[in-house]
Image (cartoon, rainbow, N blue to C red):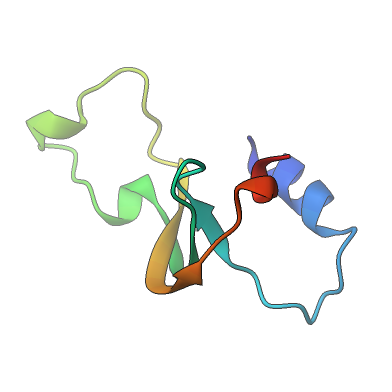
Length: 77
């Protein structure tokens, strides 16, 4: 999913609604969001672990925060 695709998806919802992360469809949990960051924020040019050609410094990550509660498997459709 691209940033633009995520923006398009989110535009259909109340802009004041809280956003959570759903994790593990077989044993679901709900998490808060800790932060949003780019790959370049936590990698360096001389780091061998970041030499994977399938990554981009502009990749965006939504980082899970606190586990809030059990979720529901129907979140996945």
